[in-house]
Picture (cartoon, one colour):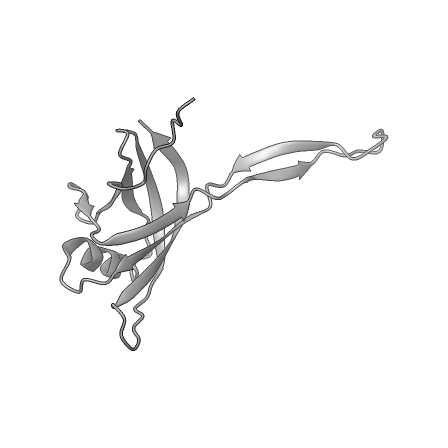
Length: 135
């Protein structure tokens, strides 16, 4: 039976820096994220015969990605500016199958790496605040 796997090629990540329009962050090479988990609440009491647990609030974790650094790319410039902003920014991840995730996140880091016989690279780390909505 043929696989229904989806290629990541063609995926796009955008940031809404102006509060109106999403701007694509260009030259992304890889990404991973939505790696959080719910908290575990202890509901044990003196009548319990063993530990009792409940599920708490979902934490959607973070989102990380690697890019070829393009120092005049509007999306990368918006990401760099958001690094010094203490408010969450709106992001949208579009997948090649037409599905899209929107989420708010703090830009925790966006670095610059270079080396001998190498492209300028960068890694970004986002901390998701609130829900991730898929459409």
